Image 1: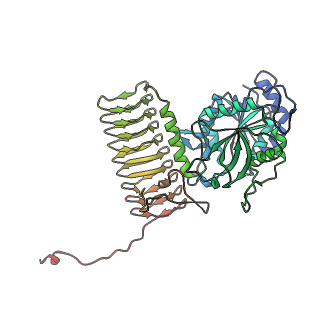
Image 2: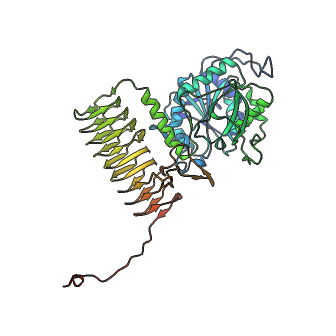
Length: 522
């Protein structure tokens, strides 16, 4: 165990947290502690490019052992799922995404992490607790941009190449491995993951890029004149420090009238390097990449990861003390963890992942690839739709229907039809129904921070914020969002988003008339 010197490292359960000023003051001690911790000093390599235009550093590249994960932003566009946790800590197939990301980095050879935190940092710490890697946290007190966040981590890295990952990026480990391999092969100052726009993507929603023959040629924010979006994964040489220090403080590479906020975007540093003649190699993600920026991306990330895991499942895996009843009908492969039960008359179509001590009972029907979290109960002729993820401790009961995502501890006791994302510990009242089909057969436009957007995934779902509740007979129209800690009273038809921390009740007018046997001739 390394000593807790200033700028040193500890295992994830005992991690120090640095302010930006403390981090810079810790530089000398950090490098020394790293050398002591990992058993050898790491030689430095002078920045001696053979060609500035080529932008390649012909030095001997040491193995890439350090990664920086950025988890400091407010995540305002992620509402209503940004009020109780950092979006990087939001579960993807029942594991916090930042932990999945850290495990993927470990698979790619990373041996230590630096995590830059800010809003809801406790949720990020909790998600990474117990990870078998040395981790240091650095607190970014003000959300001044990704370039500033990365700059705060550099004193703990030393003179070696490193990976940078945005904590809300969802992609297989193979994407990170491809990035690192390309970076080593090229010797470039910077290498990035860039994803070609899919037909459903609107380039105006992203910081985009143009590329030619595997290298970026231009980066521009929220512009229609781009063909790729930056994927939130980067590899750098330590010499990137100078470019970060020269950041202008906002994204200047925007369309005319683009109105960038006063935030130091890492993308602007890359564009400056391109303008200076550096080559910036790029690779495409392996399989898929989801940037959890808006609420529907939470649904998409769970669906993509579930499909990814399901397609790799080749054989059944049955844990200790698991029970599968002889009357169950299973048409696919299953992972049944320790103590879980597949009970009488349960029907499973597709590959299914069932967590520890989860119970599938009494005629439950699961269609397509599905995942059920630990200690959840799915029972009594309920219907679970394809690519649905049910969180740990959830209940889906008698005749309830769910398609989408349920976070931890939410209840659908009986007689409801839900499509969308159900946040943590949400209580859905009996006969709550989500409208999913519009009369124009189109997709619902959503309002995100006063901007109208048409989601590329999950446009017509309902988004129930964490710790919200509905009364009996609530109906939600396609695409509405219910804020965290809000309650929707019985019999209400929800036509528009409900803010967080609101109780909404129906005011009805009652008419009383005299009535009795005399009305029937008595």
